[in-house]
Amino acid sequence: MILQKLKESTRRQHEDVEGSVDVMNQMFSLDDYKKLIAKFWAFYAAFEPNLPYAELKEAGFDYDQRRKLKWLEADAKVLGLEKPEAFENLPDVSSLPKAFGSLYVVEGSTLGGSVIARHLNQHLGLTQENGGSFYASYGPLIGPMWKQFGEAITAYAGDGSNDDEIVAAAVETFDSINALFKSDAQASVGI
Ligand code: HEM
Image 1: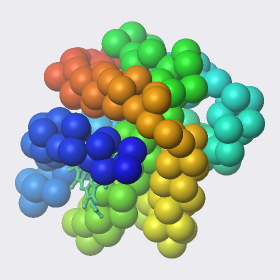
Image 2: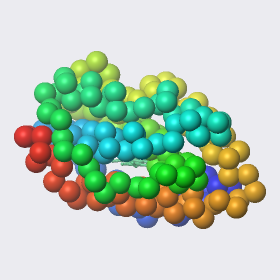
Image 3: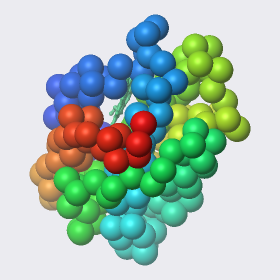
Image 4: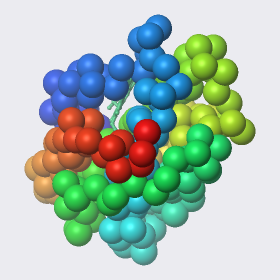
């Protein structure tokens, strides 16, 4: 139920980010890719330290195993990116409902990531080893990892009393990511 609410409440925003992230375009170049990775790096470097890891784990979801920053750092190294300035327009993840709502967006994005990773491999020759590990994410485990997240958020949402707060956090996270793509984060990494 909560997953359905989240999907419906953020459908428009997903279309917006898909429009901004022009990664599937045939004209998308390696330089464009570097800018994209720099933006996600700026986001995750600021976002991941704020998550309530222990509370999430107690509530049945271990995000620690799913951190994206290490992939972005590895990709940035291969691609020769310099550390970006921290992104400031972050979603509030200070409560469990907010963290779960925000992580819906983060974990859901791995689903599109698998399609994108295949395209980047064919189009720019990117692999998990040479700068494409963020989009490759969990590789063949993307499906099972998403299913596991779905079960955890559904169990947490329970009777639905926190649904509004969860959904509001997902909306706020998409807003933040949309702002990220409209920002000039790449300027600070010297590309
Ligand atoms: C060009 C960029 C993108 C493409 C092509 C794309 C594509 C997709 C695809 C194919 C799915 C799977 C739908 C399904 O299996 O039911 C998906 C799901 C999802 N994507 Fe994206 N996506 C993109 C960018 C993003 C970004 C940047 C975010 C947020 C950071 C995001 C968040 C999500 C979420 C939350 C879902 C789960 C939807 C649900 O089933 O509830 N996507 N996307």
